[in-house]
Image (cartoon, rainbow, N blue to C red; front, side, top):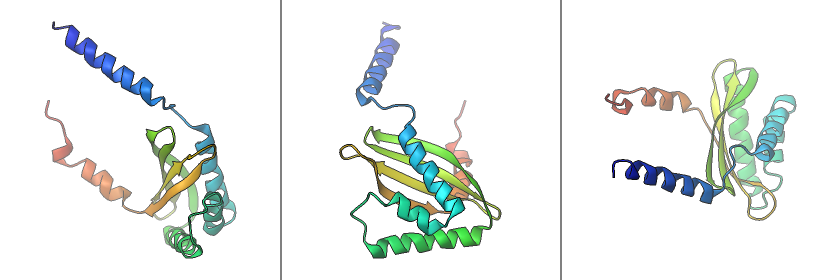
Length: 150
């Protein structure tokens, strides 16, 4: 009996993972993010936003302008651009994926979160978020109430 319970737990977890059929990586989305950051670096934040939203018909011009203004504002305040790093990729399903990136600038970093959605055959941006609260979250994660007692 002692060995049956761990075996059942492993079996249940492996069945759930297989049923999700979610890949470890998504090269197509990694390429979209890479192109976004290439345009961001070479051209402007506005052109990068235009690129990432190019297949999303549900965004108004005002919404797009607000995103461009916010990204440009972050970019201008943060100093010279020094690259980006993937923080995490989270899969809700194989058709809804969150990718979080650290955007490295000379003065301060910030985070860009892409949520991609694939309703049929093509990925589109579902949600795009920019924030500078990554350091606060990192500090919170180091607080005592997150530590495990051993």
